[in-house]
Image (cartoon, rainbow, N blue to C red):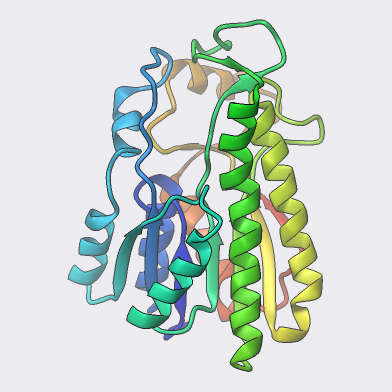
Length: 266
């Protein structure tokens, strides 16, 4: 796998940054899209994690370039419906036609239907509102749908025959209690991606979702580690690089027969 161009959203930290590095190591040029998020203070969330969400993606690009790869950092507000087209325009201008899309960014907000101020790990919760719904759905559902649409239109227009779409998801059959809008928005992204797998198959595009286990991107506390250790269904706490390896595999030639799947990692 080499010579392709990827857009990775949420690429300034965590799984997105690790995915950008993994794709670049495989020979792909990467547009690292990001948005600096100003999180409110929360005693249940480590300050280092909040700080990482405030970084730009220049450090990711610098590392890729130092290793001989090609990359570009672009700050983009995915709540803006015009952002997907701008990202593709910039990628085409600076790196070439895009054939890999990784929908990793999230507008994560912890909201709930229950009248509780904190969850079992001491993290602040907010009641479901128009604001929490909008923050979550514009980034986790609308933006992936528009980015997939942008990829498919441009792909068909140039007669391309190879493409990869990979998204990151969460939640479960019973939704995502205490993170209800997050779980619902990810369910919408799952549906968009599964539809893309069917509709875009004639264009040579595969589309899959990756459901990571608890992944320590800086937010995992001792309380969460204890919760995982005592769980009957959670097995590993993954690193961002471990998840990125799976995403990069799904974006490779070797994964050509894998499409329309939600790949659950444990």
